[in-house]
Image 1 (spheres, rainbow, N blue to C red):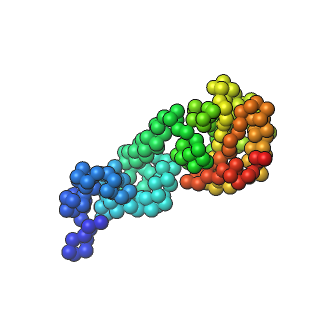
Image 2: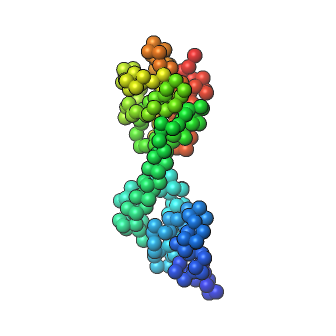
Image 3: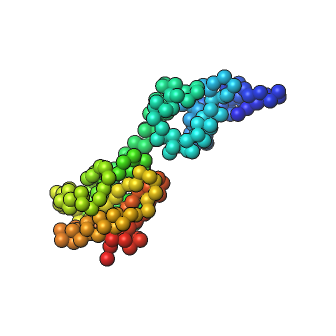
Length: 235
């Protein structure tokens, strides 16, 4: 926020040109702007008594960062003073474009060498889901990713997970190995006893099918746990 000699704030259009977000981005590039400045460009104008950059900064603080902001609904954002449906939709569209950009890198080029590789591929896709999903990553003999499949949606337990469903696409694609991943909507990726049971059952089934289960990842909010690394469910 820029103030004049009297201490009152000035509208962004009255700031020095080098400090105005739009001009700053145009001359220096988007990487030189912080999150509130980038968000301010989307919001365009502030409200009476509050410039748009301050408004953007308070919005990010309110939701504790961009992750929280991305989870807010259009209706919720629209109700905030100074927002309205147009600004809310603009924010949601921009965040969704960012999410899709991260997903567009072809999976066929990826090679899995560690749990970190899998987490990097799935974290954006699964970390913010509001209900549980079980995904299967299909791998060839050199651990190149053949694709990923969503097998289950909803609360997961060992009694409802059918081995045939989990390995169906792996058999169809002649995959040499798979990695199982599911999310915890609570954000805490700590494996439950049920997660360990599911892992043990699927690893055993994979041996019978000659398809190795390399790992089972539990995805949380910006965190994950590898059950293989924790030696949970794997002999």
